[in-house]
Length: 246
Image 1 (cartoon, rainbow, N blue to C red):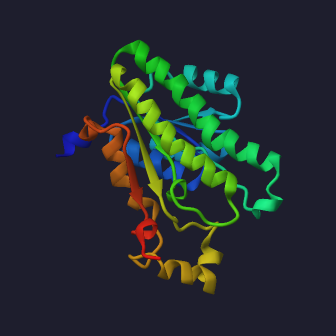
Image 2: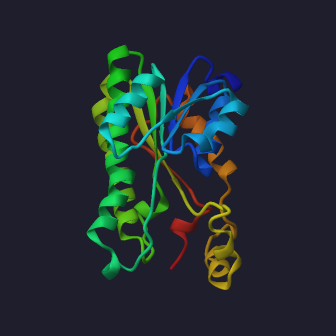
């Protein structure tokens, strides 16, 4: 079974690699034998982990087409792409500006589209296939107030995943998505320690937040040949939150 998830000889590009989940994804892929290329705007923030896992670091702004082309060219042949870069603006709908909307869409949807298509062109040209993993969210199918741009972008990303899966299948490129629920981090720790936060946790059937490690298995499944006949799928990892009863 170990050989089924072995990524030895593969190159994996992870966008948004300077963040919590991006860094975790890099560590998991490297642990499975892949050469990892870490890409983000904050190159210096990636340096400690890159040294730990012998990864390459590259500057990448997913809203800039020239930056994307340069990053993917520098990365060399890519077998696995983890489209992880993301951002959010939290603001009531009537205070959500066009600039807020464009900023979120530019990273979470347009950026994913641009990076994936640029990587896919290289995969198709090499005729060796590949795996594209879009990091979506349960908020692509459910909503919470205050993040209109984010929910719309993630809903679009889920549908884009299916669209890309159909069109790229002929090149043996698989395109799937991971939709995490709430993941515990330093950023949200204060909120989830509060009464409103604890009330939200109680609405999760498993009665706990997710951890970065909860995404490791699904990531390796989609990155490896273990999912050779999977494309256009979304794996939801949220402790049952998105299917909880009203």
